[in-house]
Length: 419
Ligand code: PMP
Image (cartoon, rainbow, N blue to C red; front, side, top):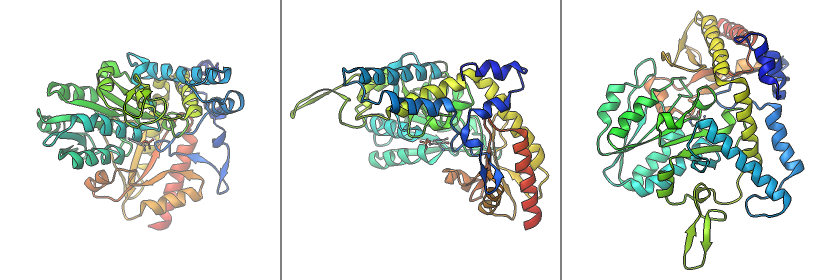
């Protein structure tokens, strides 16, 4: 794994040695329904390289111990590995300090943490919270719950037919009542990359905070929370080649320090008496209980995997596959892409008029091709497009042109048979 980048890049700077990349992902080398697996559900979760699988298993085999509290050797080793990940995530997001990184279960927990802790303290009746039309349910429901509790109002940024936010409409929604703008950096259903830097600038002008849902952005785009100047940024490990059940929330130090704890328990305290408890410093104030130690350790290796190949190489490869897929699919009778933003990542969402997405998904699965079908946890967005769901092929570093051709052949066959 250590020379993976050199190996991959030695062919040419543009062409990846996909054989070597694919060799790192054991799950890809299997047959599904009698056909070699084509895994195109990467926006839901990416597969894991050997280095990540090994890091998790080495922790359990070699130094499983609870962290922070122990003084014995294994506990110290586990604590050091856990805290190393915090430094790696800090660098991955270009945060100013490692203390601004809180480990979570994933993006969903990160957003819930901010809505519960920051939201309960700083949002009052009559305040407004802005989200966009293309949010994942995890960036809708926590804010609805907060609005209901506080008597605040949720405002929605509209989008155009291409699936891009209408910036002038966003600007109209902003006012001194706006407390927070919580918006997806990259849409999981459409692939749209939102102009988050401009969104943040405008929000800050009215004194609002900004949370970025980075679930889809973090494996495709360079993230720099300082240059973006976002107040919070949440992402999930499992979308960036890391384990499930682990992610991180970035928050600016002064905000995290002003926020009350999210959960009470061990580790988040300084001192407990039955009369009064004082809380730990950040980030530990937000990390009650024994965390997901093994998967936090695996997250570091996942980030190293990305860094070794380079995000620009990853996204160049994925974009090439998406363009190729679009070329091959666009002549299928009834093909309609959903999400045609100028600035987008390698998510190809589409419907085939007259056919149900579930049927197509099942028939593709029968050919060993894994795509996602349905509303992708963005039901309001599907409503705006007047559909129930889409078929979504999402590409990753280990996908090949041959796999795109398998998808295209499969779809052509299905449509011919069903129409
Ligand atoms: N936001 C977006 C844009 C997503 O794609 C997802 C995962 N599909 C989430 C949030 C939630 O992530 P998780 O389930 O890992 O918490």
